[in-house]
Length: 329
Image (cartoon, rainbow, N blue to C red; front, side, top):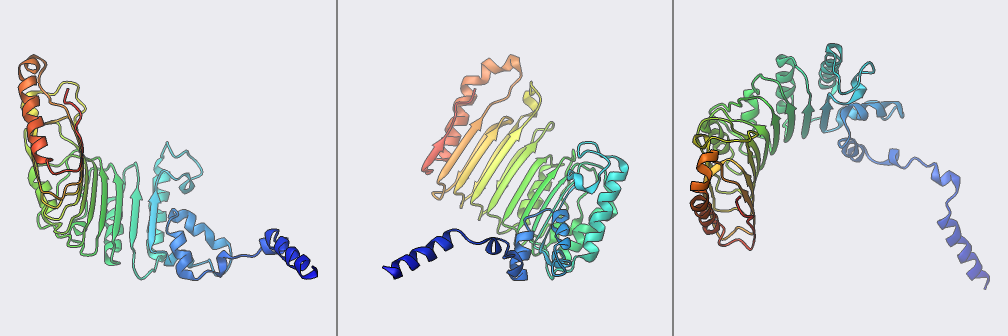
């Protein structure tokens, strides 16, 4: 009986730990590698603030294999809101990023995320990207509305595996000789290519590409959007035009050649012709298309064109196990 009471008391103590147990600093007992992994999910400016915790944390942020910078973080400046950037605010952001790259001495930089909504010194930006590439960059995300070109080194990075660009430049020009031998995931948002050769140069330079997501805006020049990628497994396309009336001569055609494709999602309000060449590997397909004509041509072409588009899509998706094809209005 006494043994039972003692055992019950011990269990109660375990359920209600003492105040001393609650105050134990368990995080600081973790190895540096685990702490750096945790800090890699924080914005760099927040990671740096951990230096005040103790002497051990003072330089720990310099070993974190990921850097994240966002001009919308109000922490960069206390004099203005994150929605109203004054020139001094951006200068402080540039100085902060420059200082971080000088002090950061991790043996490799796995991830770099940069987002800013104002003019940037092109020299500084290129130096950041070059420094990251020299440290075996694997994951790069960029949100930038500036008009200058992306550094050419980015398109010949041999270690890059993930690339996301949200680049609101009216014309994105991809250099020839793209070589991204390890790139598996490519995400492009709010992109308008100068010409179809630019897109072809990019895709041809990614021999093992497995996932591709595109949000494109094309406003002029009839063209054929052609995607040819032998190892591509996942493809998402949002192809839109902001104009309410879309002249017929501006319509585009879409052609997809992806024999290994497993997942396909298309939301397209521009293309007038579709050609889908996929094999039995396709498992899921979600298609939303809307044909575009001048108002006076719409009634004459509606029935014929809708039936042709649906027929081509169905033929291309005949092996898909899951299909969703909304009616084209």
